Length: 112
Length: 115
Image (cartoon, rainbow over all chains, first blue to last red):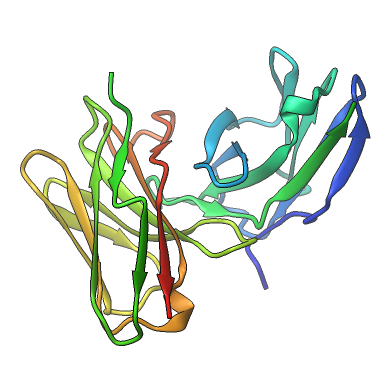
């Protein structure tokens, strides 16, 4: 069983719409949650991180965490074609330092 | 301010050979981690180096080894290459390994192809 699960997609949304990306994790000891964006052929780029239950907003991005449901999501408002990329969810566990466990990623396509 | 730099960018090796990949961390960072990313998958943690010692290791065989130098740069060595070792190898650096709110910065990776 994978520790971090994401729908591989592709998730297709029209320009200007809200894109909703979801991630579930299996280890209840997970403490920190990260969303990375990865363009094809490039390295992952950190978008947001969240530690506490609830919402965290940064510009057009909102991360949502529900530890009881072991669920974390990323909302992208006013989606742009430049947001088209693979979005990787990653978690760190208790006593794991900065070892990140990644999901397989969701490919997002924003159509003009 | 230079970010994380990796070399080479691409590499083609034959099964059974050995390979060495190199990484220079972002300025001010002293902790280096290596990840393997197979095509279409998320990165998988190989190991982390801090103060020239391997501090954590993921589920990778002993064929994967590493080193960190006094200037914080790092090498990843893979022996007895298998076809399944073909992947993008990512180096990531950060400061203060115990602080989770010190985010990882990834390099552009080395694309290894084993034939």
